[in-house]
Image (cartoon, rainbow, N blue to C red; front, side):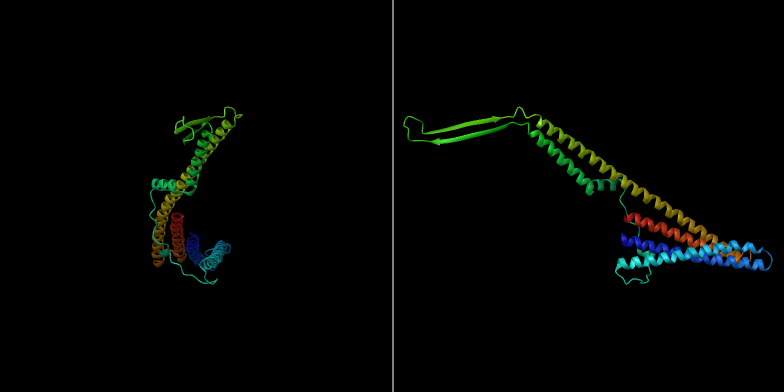
Length: 280
């Protein structure tokens, strides 16, 4: 799971860096257009300052992404036992297909049957019930049976073979309430164990429900990101056509291209987060 987390983080950051590079290129094109417009008197000098500031912001974001990518490379190299600084080429296809998860109801049933925490809590209930039974046994009287068979030939007037049978009965009538207190304590322990079991089962149900809710939300996010990418790709095609017929400036196509790269990064981010949630 740790390898998957770093693997996915690397892919996402790599896509973010690519989007940042496209954004820097679009900002440079916009700055150049603004400079030419100022030279030809179409814009005032201070009009191009906003584009310059935007370019610096984009360059800063690109640099931050590169630094984070270097850090992720070191962490992934260390986790995989590779020499630190080894450059990696990771493929999104390596993440594999989405896992086929059981239904929410089936997962709930399985985890309640096999969760170590639930099994431990149920064992605690059984132990507490055994304690109640042991405390009740203190009220059972002690009955002892005896039997003896004898043979004698020394006394002529007595029966040679004879047996003796008997029983002893003991019961403690007064113990100062010790048995009652012990039984009450055992009942308290049983109620505590039952409450603990109910709480553990409830925590498990909440955890499973939250995990499946996250899975459903990420699936929806993937669908939205897919539609958004298609929309940005359509916008890019339109802007490229407008630039070819001189109906738009080159910066419009460059900006649309950077938006496509950003949309791809968002889709990859959603897909990998879905994989990670399912792995978890």
